[in-house]
Length: 406
Image 1 (cartoon, rainbow, N blue to C red):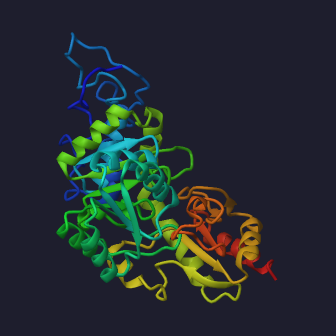
Image 2: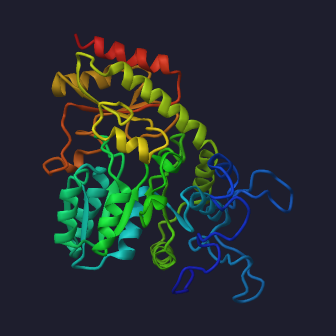
């Protein structure tokens, strides 16, 4: 193992000036295909090779080739993904991790100290809440959750708590609330808080939090960025060089890096992100429009509906409305369970954001860890990750499962 006390200066996630990095020069889809993906100079291979190596031969002691020494510090395949991620999020530094929670953990360890406080929305991913409450809490980190959609409530909490971190997730998981990134960033910065946005549901194709005023973006790249339910990963993206250095050190010192094959699979997925998100969004919109008012449903939760309380904000803040959709069953828990288990095209599984459609029962699956807290999800709620299959087939599947409820 390397004995260096800091992350490598080269190959550690900062942009290097190569083509397609400047988001002002090329469109999103162009950068998704080309940023960080320069052809192999030795062979001309269009697809850069996967560097399946743990270490790198040095020219002489301390004279490294391209800054590469040991794969925990840097790997060319991971660096390619990091340049791609930074470009798409309009950032200058990106770091690829072994999972979304590993990325969140490294970021929080980079910025928090005992006695600090984290303020987050009352409808965040259960794993994020669990991480702060059960891992950071015993180390002296405070946690408060509030309704961030109410700017007056958010302002009062920020001014009274003066948290080190304001954590946003928009749209939220699973209730599909949309929060105003620009307004909250302005309020948070006035009290010295770092603004972090979990952009997993929206992806950089639908919204770019750094452009809207956030300081840091985090992703579970397992989801839409990878896009094919075949790889685990996470990311941190920022424009703050000092913060980036701290995150890089946490990654290097603790070692939660993505492996080269995982990085390559994520990069391959990202190249089709724009076209996939358009289809995910179109299919979800079709479902939401058709299901609103169905007698078996109390609510259809989708920001693309004009009836959604945050529809106007989502229309301003997002390019499209995404592929995530939640339903509240009028028959409560029994109906929700029967519906989830009665679908045929939608598959019952954890996770989201893949090309295939998935159904999730949050109260017993993704959000089981927050039962008994203020984040507890109603047992009548079903979450759908709407895939890119034929939209008519997806609608027919949902309708037959609802009809079977009687």
